[in-house]
Length: 203
Length: 203
Image (cartoon, rainbow over all chains, first blue to last red; front, side, top):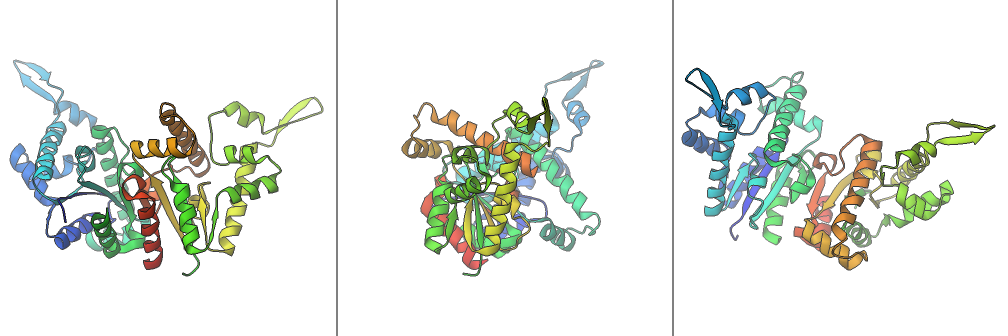
């Protein structure tokens, strides 16, 4: 296979992350998900948990964003307009571009489809599923109760939507942002991996 | 192949209509596009042009919608709240449900994915493409100049978006409404037909 970058965006509970891992393993390339977070945490000096939370989600805490862009000195608050969230985004952005320049890989989430939009060797994939399939998956793998799962998934997807909208001015999950959008509830994890591989091989 | 309905929604200029026709031909089933419009025109008594225009687009002419829901009698305007656009939608809705009940087929546009959302034998596809590919297609096939094409395509897609939003309360083009979304600019018409057939055969 010639050099290819596959970005995978995904709804919470759709199995998109696992599809990314499986795909990378089958292709013998690296899946940047946890590993990417480690790199951002190391470079930024922020804790891994903080990077994981702020690197892909905006939870509507506007006050936090404003406050985190201020510096206190000589009894005065001054701000450079760059919040901690922005700092993480800039570092993440640079690391993603560096990785894509160097090697074939799978990158999960983190606006990678947008960050790499000028590259021609990039295949952008979005994975989603029906509510029933996502619920089943969330309860099985994410340690969340059947009662709480719908609200938890909705909240996480909304935070991803807000983050993507804020940094890209595009709608997260809109088909036209991706080359291939797949319903993993219908196609299954294996089916999604198979279709993505086929597109990579043929197009 | 067991009985299957394939709905194809598409951006203007993406070749989605042609993909639907090609797919239907290869599968030996009917593609309901022009034919569906003929059926709606015949049943409603409206002119074909009017049905084609109002059956899939809302162009923002609110006054027309209000006015068309009024009846003039005994020097008074009275309204049943049902516009001509609504009437067309209701008739279209019934015809689409009847067709899907009877036979395997391809249905292009007309909110068919939403109208048939409770059927399990339905595969919902969305076709889109990059601006450059759509422009090329529009100039070649739709008798529009290279200068005018971007605005024409944008206007048509916006009218489709508004129509879909109005009748379904969902976002037209949002990946989660469809099982499979394909970038025909990358995959080509043949590639899209091939992938849809593969999904139909395997899943």
